[in-house]
Image 1: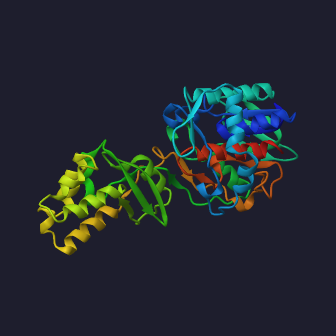
Image 2: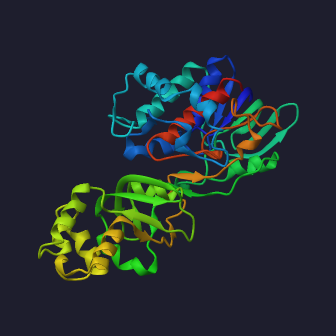
Image 3: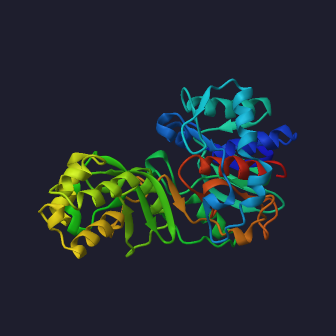
Length: 387
């Protein structure tokens, strides 16, 4: 098969790129090594696909070069993608914080992207595992579905997150083959595990409460969820991208100012700490936390230091994570193809003409809440406009 553009990977970035290039009159083939397209899209957002975030800016992304994503994000905005969703009559809603979800199923987004590809004349080939890529006058791809030659190839293979969905390091290996640096990789948006000192807290599994989680100069006010192995929930997933081994996440449980006022008022009474906290937090959490951290006596009998120390601990409970749940539970992979070697406008290699990298394989990682999909659409569109 001979085409103008071969896109490796039929995830969000790959399908967006393919359709964009196809509408320009380019002959395009998408090569997907799985038996079906969009596996990660299908499970996203609890099956409803948090397909973008209306507030997406470069500030919501992590990269060794934080400004790299600005150009692509500015040229294909959340509003552009929402307009496409509306064009296809897909019902959606805003959950919170600018997050846009399908009312129905994530499958609607996959079907929309495939419909765009069909209309643009794109050929989508599943079960096409690429074993070797050579570069002469054209790129030559040896695949399980036959040999493909292309003027340009776009690497949209994703990264290491969710290996059960077929995630591999193929894109990183290809980048290195063509002389590109890959920045250090680690799981992102991932649950953190209990250190030995907190193992007993696994009894709180399934319990969630609002917190502010802080680490590395960043803070997120969201829900924290206790699990059998550690902590999860939006607050944990967000802060995990900033956490490094050996560091401590500080968890603020006093997110409701009325709670602190109630504690101060109860200081002069015979009430115990737990009796006040259960008015604002789940009883199971309060009992476990007070048993581990608070003097068991009425607040009026706390010394000034005991009271101040207790408040300080409620505001900044140190969670010295043992580690993360790893790539099987990570929503994204931090790090990727070094953006220093790519054009921020086109996503093309600065050293290998016709070679492009888009989506999660690149060292651009978004927050939880639709930001990574927006990067997929924006980077895919940027490459599709020129490949």
